[in-house]
Image 1: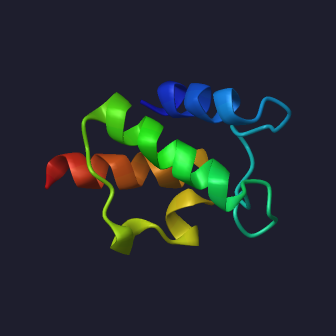
Image 2: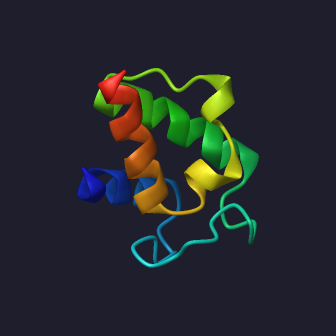
Length: 76
């Protein structure tokens, strides 16, 4: 799952080391438009629906955080 998320992130921006970065939101690496695009891609790829309550910096600061969020939503 993490590899798929990394691939989705690289499709949005290909000049970032998403595997090790943990400040994607805090440092402004991903813009609000990038996040909207990413939410759509995650919803489609993993057959989930990310509610507005989950769209917080903590869930999008790293690929690992996104993976944890997706797993949590799949379990619901």
